[in-house]
Length: 57
Image (cartoon, rainbow, N blue to C red; front, side, top):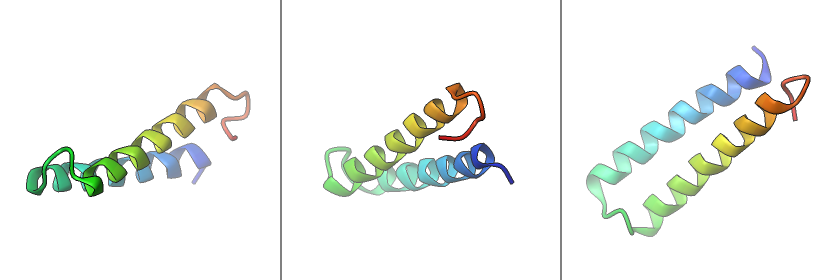
């Protein structure tokens, strides 16, 4: 499995985690904010990898 595929799987897991948390907690809850930041970091990493010539960072 290439790095992009692994990262996409990670992103989907982080999205599911964020969705679950947001259903049971306030959006301003520190745990929800931390999950959102982890997802943002993974999405930024994905965009960086996608733009690199080799598809890897």
